[in-house]
Image 1 (cartoon, helix red, strand yellow):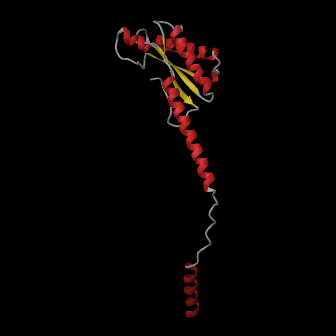
Image 2 (cartoon, one colour; image 1 turned 135 degrees about the vertical axis):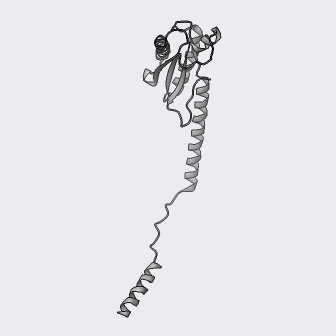
Image 3 (cartoon, one colour; image 1 turned 180 degrees about the vertical axis):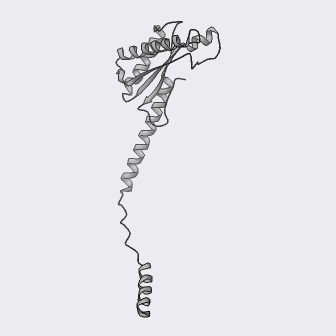
Length: 176
């Protein structure tokens, strides 16, 4: 019995020192992998820079009192925005319609919707696929400028853009 226990102890100690063969390390061509990673990083940086530029350059569109008609200045800005969207065909944007504080909440929500829709229609007529554009109205709820003055009201009668898809992570632009 002692012999059996001694054999068992030695066998256990011997196995404790046994190590299995480690799995083989994957073979990586570090030169090719490094060049590919550098190219991917460079492409990502270029895309992020382009997206930041795009977010800065989307122009707000302003409207007259109680109107969703586009002015000639608005059409010029939207022509520039359409060119940006055509240059970046994977982008999708949200058009946010806004109104000043005058009028009821319900009326201003409808007016903001009409303004955003007018912008969408112009962009679609300029060759931007409508499926790339979402429309939302905030009415008077998100003023750009606080106050009850003509200057504040004029600033708040607007449509603006937000990139919602196709941008690198962390790059969600709105107009300045």
